[in-house]
Length: 263
Image (tube, rainbow, N blue to C red; front, side):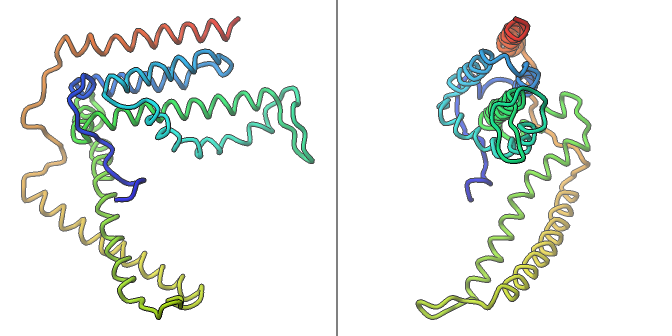
């Protein structure tokens, strides 16, 4: 599989791997919420959030620097907030013809980029240390609507099915696109666009037909819209206590962030 589409879970026996998935989901959601609600100019809070995320990564047997690099995948999406650089009222700091970057706009943009980067690390940490089946089961146990859980489950699984069908089409095209050495196969841009459009349509039909076969097989095996575990683990007091420790740290960092912002 290519890097953007691969199973993120990495098997392990760390304390974070063994922690109840329901506790991990709740802690991750609270961590992302706390990061998002951090005041923009509470700059000392962001290193503390990263230190907390890195500590959890070490607890899970992961390299925090590698996790930080993986979290960089979210930074391009933060560019959607680039208009804040020019539209936020404030004192101008950089002036270019027709555009003016304000200090408040720059601070807001940097804060959004940092929050996106930190939130992505928290989500990746959850995905790396928790099997996807356990994640969907935890969401169902936390009373997330069953329809939404089923949609998330099938969407994730069918991404890999869709990629497999696309790989087959690409291999078939490559096998039928022979060319002499030093020559380029295929025709002009219009011809290539026509071939690509036909492949997309073929991919849709093949994926639809395969999904029908998979769904019929699931019904034959007793599927009724719910994902089940044979032996669902009980929620122990130890797991709750372990989950409460990072929550207390989140509260402390949030209080410090508010104090810095108010100062």
